[in-house]
Image: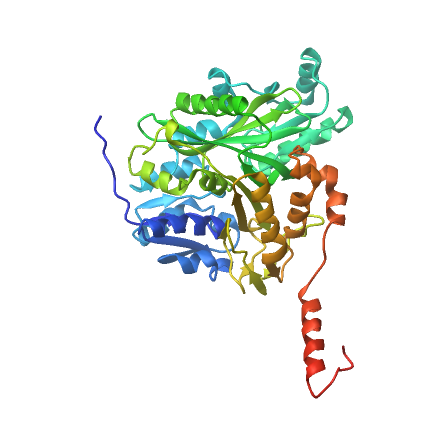
Length: 488
């Protein structure tokens, strides 16, 4: 077999923030120059300073900037970039954009456009999974009205709750859990309207809701020559509003036999599809029945890929670049031996009590350091968090010899070494979760946060910089000639 490799001279990262910075780190390792793109409010963003060149692509609304495909291609050509990495979010799973990149004579760093298109449609993805003998959640596709849902529930003896999902969906949008018949009409209408607004496609499918389900996903890498390897699994069960906020690898929910079965099932599916580059097969695990079901495939780099990198020692972004240049995977399945436990928390600029967005300038930033800590940040002290984009501004990842170690390092990082001021963050909530006895025991489901929210909030420890300033002022007053002042 002749292997033809293509050279990449410069990569444009079609993204912003944490994502863009993460890809740039690998590019620096590889001595590959990078191009950043930025909207007007992002002109002083961290990723802009980090790149070798930067191109302004439009105003704040994503449709005018980070979702504008023509401007992305033009920016690549203008900056002499010959490849595009989409990161995650925005255009990462857009097959039209992938096709445009290739048609412009540029290298697309990701799976083939046809594969992105087939797997981006939940109905088609489910059919592909069934064809590959991958277990899928009982449900119906091509749902046009609630009578179909009622008929299916009756004939298949399915009880509430059920889940309505956008066919073209992702990121928790266009998903509605229906607890009883009284909610059905409204939930169906809401899921369709949200799907149309978010994805321009109002098609929905309906599935049985797995009570106390756990979210487990398998990281896959593949090359153009039919080699597909799994890098083991991640547990992504701790979520709010169907969006992950804590992930860990390996999963504490499964044993070695289930792990093997789940990972090889994912490889079989991706091999059947002819998958190349990096991707993730997501499963929902019914812990009471000890059964797993196919959820979807993410045809991109995942936010939580860093925990897999920590336990395997591999650079997944580096693998994506190598595969895009036509190289074979440099390892076989038998070469992959995870030997650590890793934990990731997502630091979002949100109020930890109600998840409402918190925007503004970061007036103080102290980033955790020390053994077993890896930080992926998209900001610096003094940076602005604009209100137009995803609220994620930092990923905090810790590792240890076992789960207890990884949790202890995370506790130290969140409670002692992290300071973010000027905006609210999820840090107090994340700390409460990792200290919760049920989390420590590995006993949780996707409903963990909604079931324990009040208890988690009651565990918050309030402290702010004003307390510190007053403490210092008192000390200075005691040792100065002025003595204590009235304002103290």
